[in-house]
Image (tube, rainbow, N blue to C red; front, side, top):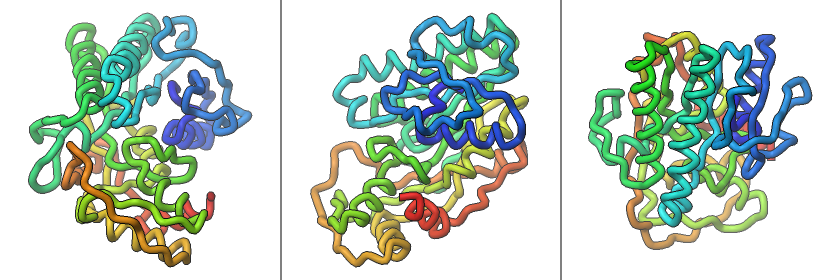
Amino acid sequence: MTGGAGFIGSHVVEALLARGDEVLVLDDLSTGKRENVPESAELREIDVRAPLEEHLEGAEACFHLAAQVDVRAAVERPDFDADVNVLGTIRVLEAARAHETQVVLASTGGAIYGEHEGRATEETARRPLSPYGVSKLAAEEYVAAYNRLYGTRHVSLRYANVYGPRQDPKGEAGVVAIFLGALARKKAPRIFGDGKQTRDYVYAGDVAQATLAAAGRDGIFNVGTGIETSVLDLYALCRRVAGVEVEPEMAPARLGELERSVLDASLAERGLGWTPQVELEDGLRRTWESL
């Protein structure tokens, strides 16, 4: 597991351990935290851009979740973003090829599809608006190219906006962490634009189960709920679960922000036997309790 000390990665590690797997976590701890890794998993501190062959020896699967996920940082430093997300993926693929290990790549839906009508399927045109979306799409293309070139069966998962305990507020979908963190301090968070932008919010525990289900399969799968929730409605739910009545501060819209992003995950239901189980308000309540 690369990035296993991070937000989503740590949930996948927990799910793997719960089913009895032996787990080796590779993480440079630049954004991940040592305390996120359970004691029963081994942690090796290493940058995903380093040679990884020795670490994948004997591995049945490599869940590749190490990434640069800050969209604003990607705009400011697209070279660093590509270095981590593209070169890091190539390092993983090369190490996996040396040991005939399957790779499960964590990718992104909203940042890859860009603006689109209706629910985005895996066949929807890909029009990323940010360097982050471009780098994740490039990583997917490397995965697909290795499958064609070497006959491997690697798989890519396009996550919707993942939220849950241990979420990093700087990540692509960090708005839940920002809202609940502000409410915990009785502070007013900022909402950019009119707040009518919609997203597909999927709970981290559900995402972990989809990620495990992808091992042994191949192709590309969306992982989301198919339900649109506006930023204003999300904040109203956050206030409800927190029991804190604080009005948000409205701010000008940010350049390049998507107006809507929602995924069609019916292929994951058919191909992985996966459907999301945690409804948004319940997931927000679990996240709030974790704070």
